[in-house]
Length: 54
Image (cartoon, rainbow, N blue to C red; front, side, top):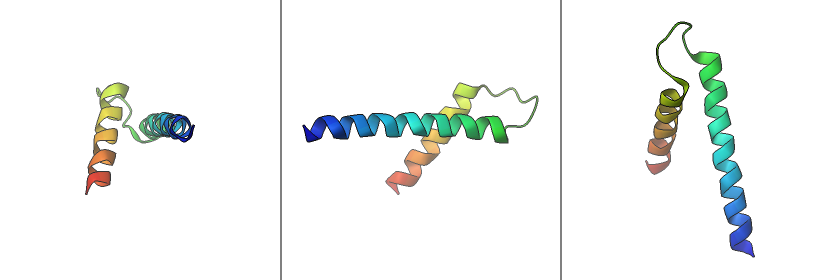
């Protein structure tokens, strides 16, 4: 039973990371830049993962 709760918690954690990255993208990105939202989110998530590994 604990595994199910851990999986659900991890899922919502990843979902929250995704929406936080998207909100960061909407607030910070330069107007008129060509970078797409998906590319920006991939960059942010890769930076977060690098910080977690170190």
